[in-house]
Length: 340
Image (tube, rainbow, N blue to C red; front, side, top):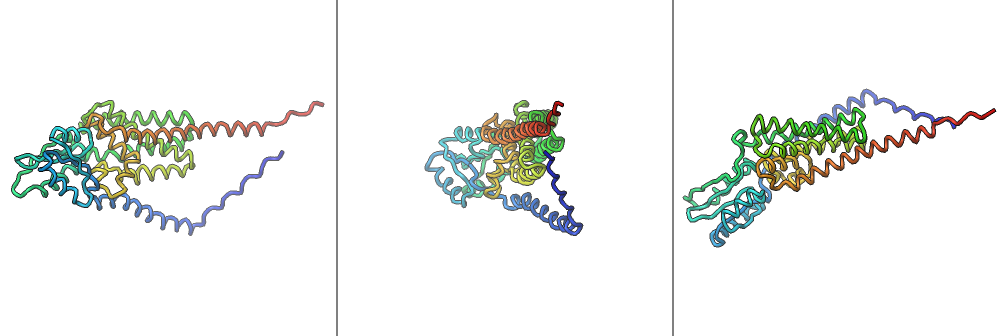
């Protein structure tokens, strides 16, 4: 049987069309990037931000009603006393709480959950407080002294996202498949987690939780990003690298809410960001670094889903690649020469 004729080569694009692609695509890419990064910050405002109100019902009800009347800005939870409100903050059910006392309102915040949110709550509660009263503020879970504004933690999402994109891209471009590709992604993510924890916790002191839990959270975030890129590449070819980078870096990083809070981003950006590796990774890192793991289940499930699906697609692509050459070799094997 004669070999099939090779497919005709695709003619190269004319120079004029190449020039047009550059002229059009670069401004479009910049416009999309500016939209993804600048728009959420320009429209930052609370959207169903979980806060608590504690104290006797008769005294706390007016304050609760005032907060609920602010066009859906706050999702108000009622607590019997200050102790219950503190527990809710430490378990990451609310960002802060107002306790009604005979001396006036008392604001409980958690700057470790987001200094921007703590400042916003201080301003909002001070505006709602009775005229002449003094607002007492207590930081229940304070941000570390080395990073009181959360700027270092907020800047951690992009490097980890880039590390994941780099790992997924290298695995694809180097032609690694199957178990080797999965092993490379897991190994790179583990080393990224260890290195990032050594820098952020041991050196800079901006993370104050269990060291190994922090390293695991950082590594899982890098693995989810890398597996996403490699998984899309296994499904779509090299174009999948661009799809993965778009989701992880161009959308995932600015929509993560790591620098502020997901509830401060425009809807539904904050919710979408928590479904992508940078957003879920930032939430997980705050949980293990400052809240003893409270609120870590959902981001772990999200990151684990990205990691497992990506590794599964990469592994299946390797198995499919091994079967295809074997089948081809069988068909190409020459028939035995006839015996004379």
